[in-house]
Length: 138
Image (cartoon, rainbow, N blue to C red):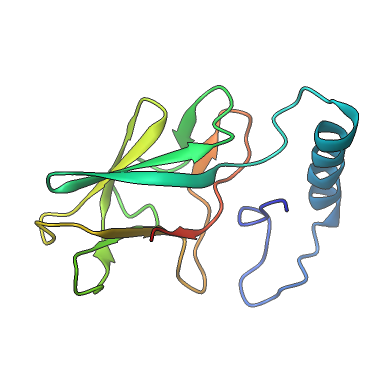
């Protein structure tokens, strides 16, 4: 699987930019089947830790590190919810190799998600320029 959240098109599951998708698939095939050393995937959700009123999300395929393509702390596609599972927009901060997610409206967080809306855009990338995949924590 390659993530295309940053090169797809709203309301069209068949994006016109097939070149970049093909390149990502080729790099993935080289890494998985032929021992290529490139980072072949964007960030994939690994797990999360609840830390008081915040959630720290950990990822696989972090490569050289994490970066937001938008200003940190603004609406970056992360949402957070308590036990009632009512999600609200969350603030975020890169913390080492993870992302800290929080909201003053959620005092006891239980769940978080990223790029979960129908027209979400990619904001979180690894330093190699590959976007994070959408996820919902469990």
